[in-house]
Length: 118
Length: 118
DNA sequence: GTAACGTACAACCAAATGGTTTTACATATG
DNA sequence: CATATGTAAAACCATTTGGTTGTACGTTAC
Image 1 (cartoon, rainbow over the protein chains, first blue to last red):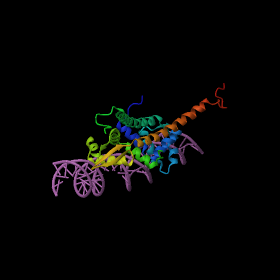
Image 2: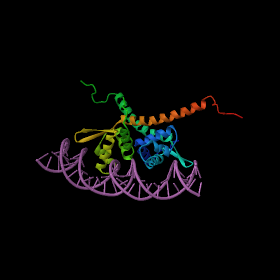
Image 3: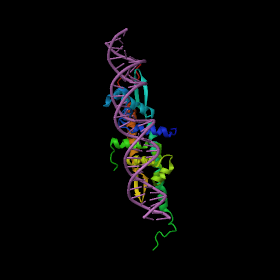
Image 4: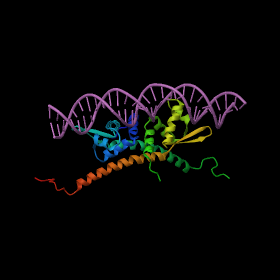
């Protein structure tokens, strides 16, 4: 049962998603696992830079890194995506609740203040 | 028809969501519009700091700011939430596609390479 | 008209980000 | 063993971020 995230965890999640390179790494490793070197080869920046991006994603829980020999297999984590979706769903719920309240208001008995007085 | 977002726009969106104060502002203004001053009163930081948070949210499209006399009414923008959800949905689709591919593989005719040779 | 209110904006600061290069170390490979 | 490969980690740098205070300006209220 998807435990509720702390503010700091949500911060890290969205922060990690706020970079195009990192989003691309998540996409790739969601399709198929890849080593850090393979990922590094895909972008126009140093190995160390890509390594850092992977580290940010790992701390946010968006990918997992598993040693295999001298390599590190990086895998996208669908659960983390689901958690992020839940956060956004919560916003949508709030907004829908407001819409419902307004709808209810409009459907009410006409209030005592002359809605259609002449 | 929800136009597709550029990388920079998605960056701004997730970046804007990567701060607890800003997420709270979105929640509040989704429930009911509020002035910048009202918002500022709700947090333990300077007016200017809150003003900046609102500006970040506005640039990301997550809230709108509308002048009313000397005040600025801040309103949460449900469309932006929907756009963010779409981004995450895209990740989920990728992952589901992989699961489907694996399922299909497992359901295939046993391959030519001795699945159950003795 | 003057004072108070709500907002905007600039200047400043510490800390975090996103990148670099270099060094070190463990694991494969010849 | 010697060498090449894959990763980690440190030091460094420019820019951005998240906060501050101070000042200026339009709008309301008295």
